[in-house]
Image 1: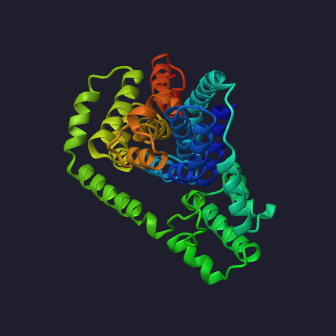
Image 2: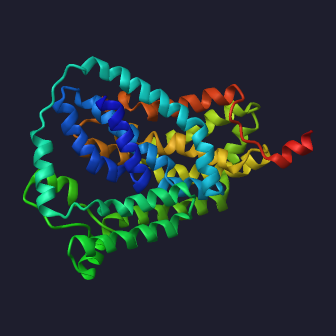
Image 3: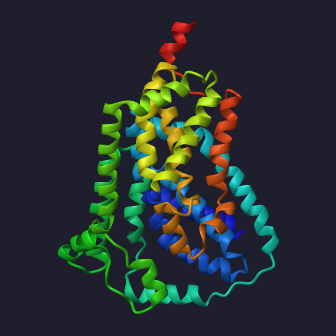
Length: 358
């Protein structure tokens, strides 16, 4: 049961925090040690971690890629998440079944619990493990379920985190705010635990902000100049079926990841290129935003030279070419989306266009 339970654990973590990188760098590292200790090959465990980590990165309303895809396609955030659920949930259930099936092969394995015991003892001696310390994550998860706006949700979660740190961990407000900016820096002396806890704060994410800013500027220039739009228009004029359009968007977004090495650029540029075409064909913007995530967010970790692929490989200690074939959610979702669109399933059309046509 380790692989399916690990998938669910990574999914809940990434869904609550909105980050695949943070999930892989904390829960993912712990699961890698446990899985290998149980005798499961590292590439399989890493593929499971990547699948769970990118499920939340794709579906969480506080994820950067989720918000970026919705903005790029001019879609409502929660309409975008609902649209993704049509193809993501079936893909997730298929992946869950495959991991459970693979896990049967290792049912007789016995784990080495020494590392787990070391982590537990070090954390319990360094922190107050009152059940209230999970309050910030519980608040964020609840607000997500209630469809509360993303930015206020993150602000409320941050305030809850600072409050819990001050009350239960005995640090000052100044220290808590410093941790927000620079990350937690107090090492325990145990390398295994420090790899889980010592992480960057706002400053560590400035490269993401700058990259997104540059990508938005580039997208604006390309949209104004219009030559890419002309190129895409020539291709679109030959496409008659929605299934072919879906395959084109997913394919060019994957190509954007591979050519530019960054998920954000692929999402922004393809959102800019296709949003007018989707309007002309009577397709809702959340369908485009869904495809941007299926071709962009999910496949970034499967390409070795992207930032996502490089981070996952270095963090989990497994090369991309080895874990990619076991990242079943990332592989299945784009293929299933294309297949369903050719069958006319989950095609999101503009209601006004449909009424006029009738």
